[in-house]
Image (tube, rainbow, N blue to C red; front, side, top):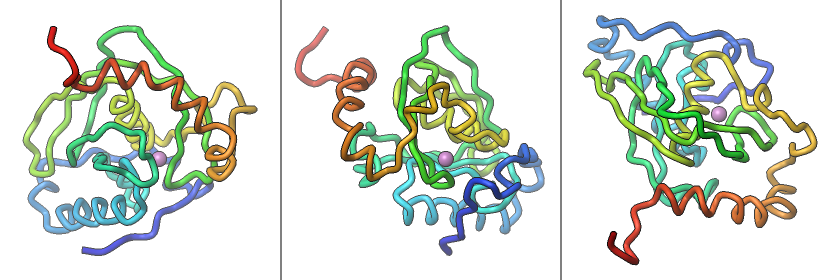
Length: 196
Ligand code: NI
């Protein structure tokens, strides 16, 4: 396993739509090594997700996983999941205003994400599955699938004045953001304080 370098905004590999993982590639040791390296690179950088083109490989596969993340301490946990050839199906029209960062982009900013999505994908061995994601976790999936299509967060930021450095987000934006997303998290997290 190895941590691979992460290309940054301006590198053409981030703008090229990725090629689907073919049936034959799943059995290829180079593909399995790529997935292992993506996981290690994501964890090394404290990312919530990483797309293959973020390690310079233009293939339609991403990894997501959140567990007490130092970079995004407010994010609910997501089990480590490999999504090959993912397709998002929105479950409704609801959207919410997130603020996102990216391992390939040095700024954060506000953008809208869908609240409820169903993802059809293949696991790292090519087995198909579907999974429903909501709220912040749905935002993470949409962010990575954007990467796989060559899109970056700056493409979706409808208010350029919301753009900040990470340092200034911590100083000036974090408190208001946490207030804004509290109801989103409350709706999507399993609640232990009462029964329905
Ligand atoms: Ni990103």
